[in-house]
Image 1 (spheres, rainbow, N blue to C red):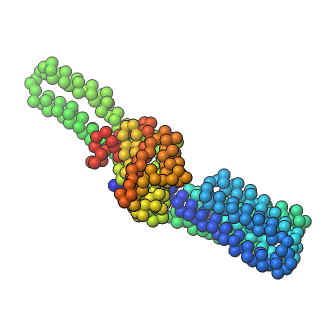
Image 2: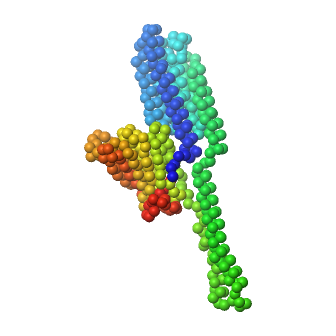
Image 3: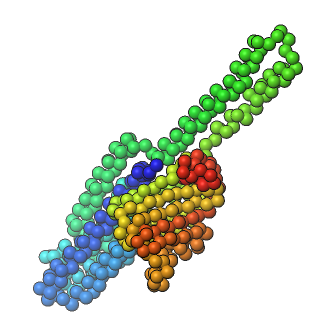
Length: 415
């Protein structure tokens, strides 16, 4: 069985993450395209003395955008807004003081960094979250314009640029919100669907157990009584009493009272793994995930995070170096360890021949797994493809599930 669908929340995060990346790219483009115009304008008007500091401040903003694209997390984005706002204020003050004529003829050059402040975002789980980040950037741009005006003793002017960027961003996010709302009514929540499926399984199991216990006790006892003589012997009475005790005890019912479910940490790890597979599929690497069952195995969250990063590094190596367009990921569970086996049929390599300066395999895979309490092993040879096995210890087995046909025995697959 192959995993081909993302949970609804993960799919939403992928979409909004792509939108946020587009916004950051647009912000960088605003800065980059403004640089030649700024140089030409200042040189033409004999104000080239302002160029070095202005270009340095624009470079600071571009560097901040690069860091945010690399680590698109809320703390990083907030740090970018603080740093970029300060750089934008210094940029505006420098232009106004060194080239005051720019307010009358080329004010758009002053507010270009303010426009870049609005084009921000993170991989939020909803379009509303993306809208909130754009509004925060807009507030930062307005604050920067006010501070620059106070420093230069000039009227507050923001221009239409930041407002137009904000309106465009809101339109995009509202469109995504409308699409997500429509699809939410069509696509079930996979966590809810999983719980409903388990409850239905428990109900079916209860019905089966009830049918079996009624047949083995009530129906058989009634048949025995009907065919027995007028006076029941002691053996028959003991049997009837034992069957009544079985029905009253409810021991046959307890097995279906509870359904094992993963906790929030395990759900987050599972969603991250699904998102990882989808990301590499979009980048051109077909990721076939096999070994799916209904079991619930719990392992340490720290080890799970290390596993995700090691899997990312492994799939990155397949995509960049193997020459193969397919990676097969098989997930195998035992009572003590969960193992992710990643195999490709690419060009392979000699692990002993990898230079010590190449840290991808040693640090991103082997040592990362070892430091988190897991294991990592790599088999490869030139022309024979590569197989990577990543293992993390199982903390608790809440439900062993049903092992797949090719994994009978001590190991069980999971999904």
